Image (tube, rainbow, N blue to C red; front, top):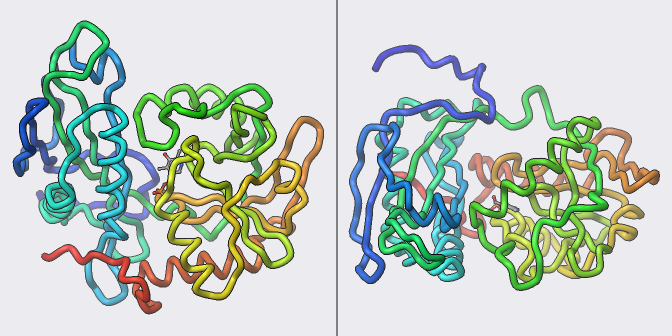
Length: 339
Ligand SMILES: *Cc1c(COP(=O)(O)O)cnc(C)c1O
C-alpha cells in the first residue's frame, strides 16, 4: 500500500486503483446501496444485455483537491440526472441520485491515496450502468449492474494550454434525430473511433461532426461540445437530441451569461463557425480546449495565431478558478467529499 505514486507521469490513461463499487438489481426491483470490493475483473454472463445489444451507459466526472485543501466533485448531481435520463432512453432502471452520489463519494474516499495533489491532476470517476443479466431476444435485460471505478489522471494540458487543429468529417455522423446521441450510451462511441483515428493520422486532434440531416451545422467535436465567438457573442449548437448535454457546456453558458456575455444556443453552421473570431470545445476531461484551426475539404479557417482567444481564456480561467476554489463558487457547483 505504500508504493510511491509518480504524479508527474500521469496522463489521461487507466491506472488500476484499490477499490470499486458495485450494486445489482432486477428489472422491477428498487436499487439498494451497493458495496466496495477490490478493483478487478468481474464475472458476467456471455448473454448479458450489455455485451450483446449495448444496453449500457457511462458517465465521466472528476474529483480533485482545491486550494482550500478540500476534495470536491463538480456538479455530480448533474451526472446522476444525466445517467437517469439515459437509463430511461435505454430502458434500464434509473439509479437514484442519492445512491449515485454516495457511490462516487465512497469510491474517492476508499481510493484517496490515488488522488493527485492540487494542480497535478484529478481522480477521474467512471460510473457505468449496464444490462448485466442474460437475454437472447432484443429486449431489456432481466437484471442490471451499477458500477463505479476510479483512476488518477494527469493534468490535461501539460506545459500549458495548447490549441488544437480539427477536421470536419465529410462522411461520418455521430448521431441521428431520434437516436441516442443525447445520452451517454456506450454504443455511441465505437463508431467514432475510426473517423477519429483517421483524422489523427492526418495530423488533426479530432473530428468535428456535422448534423446528419442537412450536413451543414456543427454538432460536436469527438466527445466534446463546441462553442465559437463572433463579435463578442458566444454561440453553441442548441440541444436538439443529437448533441450530448455536457455539464461543462451548461456551466460555460451560465458563467458567460452571468458575466453579461450574450449567449446563443442555436444552429451553428460550419460556414459561420469558420468565420468566427474564436472557437473552443469543452468537456470534463480538458475543461476547455481552444481551437487553432478548422479544416473542411480544402478550406482551412484559423483562429488566434496558436493562442486561445480572449473570451476563451476568460471563461477558462473563471471555470477553473471556481473548480480550484481560487474564485468564489457563485453557483454552488462544488460538492465536498467528506474525508
Ligand atoms: C461526455 C460528453 C461530452 C461532455 O460532457 P461533460 O459533462 O461536459 O463532460 C460532450 N459530448 C459527448 C459526446 C460526450 O460523451
